[in-house]
Length: 158
Figure: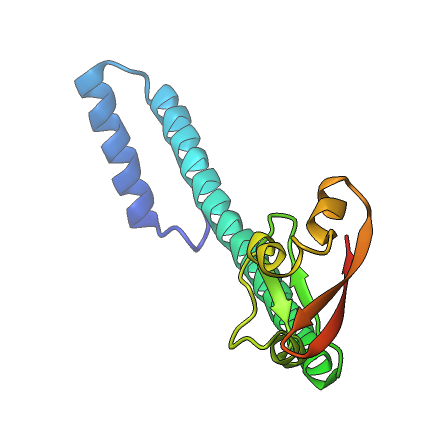
């Protein structure tokens, strides 16, 4: 059996299988085949678990890299938005606030931006037709809002 399997181990294994054969009445050759099959299954399971773990680690690294890229892009966008003199409010398809800049909050005379589009339209889109235009499905709209003594033009793009 080679150097990696010493002779005394070879004799021990042969004795073990001979004893099992006498006890069960199963041929020694069949027992060797079954043992080989079981060993093969165990090796396959080990390799499968090892490869699954490796694939999972690679997947985790890709996800982590994508998250870091997303965060970096978000920071860049925030820097650009914060430097603009025009106000920007961005709402997602579900109507929730995605992003805003300080200029928009300042122009609207608020402490924070409206958290959802419905709140924004309730405050600034009822009397000037902005909400009606969006409900009718126009791809964008424009309206004037009076805030204090100022007039602010609001444009909506979908």
